[in-house]
Length: 402
Image 1 (cartoon, one colour):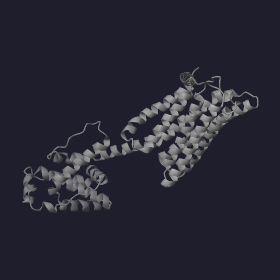
Image 2 (spheres, one colour):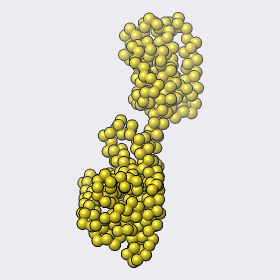
Image 3 (cartoon, one colour):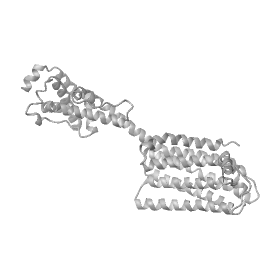
Image 4 (cartoon, one colour):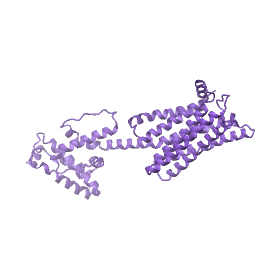
């Protein structure tokens, strides 16, 4: 009595759920993330409780013969409703429309679940069937209706999911579209699953025997479809988070030249608490931006508008666009100010009366900082300004600032 064809997908769902759990704990208020985790949990429960060994154990523990049948059917109906609700809320739209559609699907599948329980209670299933319950009791009053009801509800959910995912996929791009198409393909398996089950049941109604379609083939189809759908649900979220992390790491790396340029100046002030290398990348980017702004603040009295004007003219003359030229001019002014600060260890310029009129580089956001940092590393205009500043002696500096 091997239940591997059921337990393998259940374990797969559990593994994905474990992978998603840390993200859920960090951002448990995210309704989309909670819904995906709920779906993974329900899918795993369906396969776990549908396995013959589990069926036997549940029947034995409860003392009710075949009680596992309505339990699995209710779990399957709940899973179907959860999928529909997730897609509706994921897609978004007018809140009143979303609430109305969600309420209808929940009410509909709630009624189906209640009817499954009532029909099972009215029926008579004295012989325990671990694998072929649907076909064995296909001609039993009330149980027959229960079987048809759950198969019909499962088919409707599958078709509705395919239609909604396909329509939405035509309106979006990227990983979301790929995920929706994968979900649609996975739920398309509901149709052959139900067709196989219905074929075997109808054969029983007509005195035939096609039980193998229901007992062995249909579960394999459902298992494959569920795992494909799980990949579709997780793919857009996973890829979005990977993309966000990559973008954040890229920002952190691109800020490196500017951060290293200003680090000696920033370290002269009150040193900020350093984070460990395993700290979240968002915090590391924030730390790096904070260090840069501290350095800019310490350099403010040393910024020279003439240096920036000359660098801007040189950048424009070399073919740089106005926005790039401004970044190159600001970077040239920064590198000259770093040298000027090094030549003024006593801070004579800081105490001068003219520091309030010093120009300020454009650092309104991370994009400006990244642009300035790239100019420090790549611009020949900035390289020339750095060489000129490096040739400036302390006596020349004091002569210019006196």
